[in-house]
Each structure stands twice: as structure tokens, then as C-alpha cells.
Image (cartoon, rainbow, N blue to C red):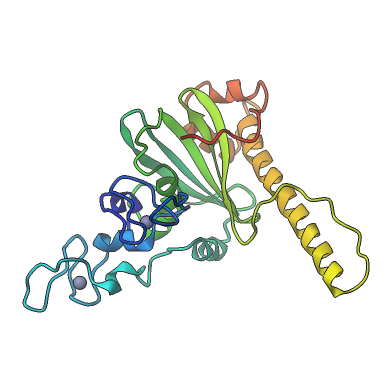
Length: 274
Ligand SMILES: [Zn+2]
Ligand SMILES: [Zn+2]
């Protein structure tokens, strides 16, 4: 099990991000990444080369402190669910259709995960974990740390991160500095583009290919909006309803939030917080 929040205590050996800051796609003028780089978690792993235990620094053959962690320690461990493909696989094994991660942070607080829950298609809770209770919940919470790092510079934020296993996308919604927000963090195996009108198939392999591509893009665009609609539907569930999803949401969000959200959906696209 590897707590990604602790990874932020280290600078990133891959992208050079300083401690407490988000990882970037490159050292210079990179864009923020979805997840912290695997190398950044070296201290939480034992070292395959020098056998240093989790938390310890690497050692030279003579037992002195090594100048830097051994290369083997920069790669994810065998049990680490490092990339999102492995997380989706694990959700499939659980037969979970959604994973919900309730979190908060900001306004001087470094952020914390309150609970991680798996649900099946009937919205029954399959599993529920607190912080530090296993690799799967840590992996499910990883996008929170990738997105917000330690919430430095963020106003008070309370949110629910949703892994939607059917649409293979990860969304976040909640309240930030007293205002509702929602954001698509990423969709796996499909690049989001605005909906493209399918072009008619003319003749020849090339145009058939481009028509198929346009159709796929169109579908990908529609999927994204369905996903956001799911988050909205979660919010709008009628007061007095007693579905587990609503119960979870009530726990996740501050009192009064659902009532405010019911006045109408917030405008889209969601604002990109700094
Ligand atoms: Zn990095
Ligand atoms: Zn080592």
C-alpha cells in the first residue's frame, strides 16, 4: 500500500516538481499530470537493490547513505495499482460500477480523504474504506493528489471524486470556496474532443476510416456529457429519497448544498480552478 499524499513530501525525480507541488509533463513549461509520477513514491517502497525498507533511505554496499534512491526503487512495485488501466481492471474484478472518493482540503488544510466506497449497478455498497486501509483505496484517491497536491493556494474545497467504471472516466464535483463546481478529470482510452457531426461515408478506405473516427469522437463527446449528467443527477436526488447514493452524497457534502444545487445546474464547462 502506498499513500500518494506522502509522495508529495518529496521532489519528483521524473519531472523535477518541487515537494508539495503537482507533477508536470516535462521539466520546463510542462502541463500538470493526472497522477503523480511513480518515481516520486520511492520512499514509500522498499528498495529491490539495497533492501532499504519503506521510509528508509537507500544504502551503499558499505552501508552508508546513498546519494540518491536506486533506479529500481523509482518504478512502481508489483502490488501497486499505478496506472488507471489497472484500477479499472480491479473495479471490474469487484464488479463495481462506481468508486466514490470523498475528500476535503484547502484554506490552509493539506487535504484528507474521508472515505472511499465501491458501488455496484444497484447502488449497493460493495466496500468502504477509510484513509490508509489498502492499495485500492489509495489508488482510487490518487487523482485527488494529482489534481490538488496539498491544496496549497486553494480555498476550502469539499468534493466527491467519481470513478465511473462503465464510461471509464473520472469526475469530480463539490463545493469550492462556497461555490459548486464540477470537472471531468480524465476519460480513459478516449481523448475528449467536442462532439463532431458524423461525416457521410463516401468511398475508399481512407474516407471510411475518417467517418469511423468522426463517429467515435462524436460518441466520446456524448459520453462526457452523460458523465457530467450523472454527477448532476447525484446532486439533484430529491430530498427525502433514501438511496445509498444520496446518503453517501449527503455525507460527502456540507449541509444545504443539495438544496442550493437543486435550483439549477451550474454552468458548463466547469471553471478550472487555479
Ligand atoms: Zn513528477
Ligand atoms: Zn536502494
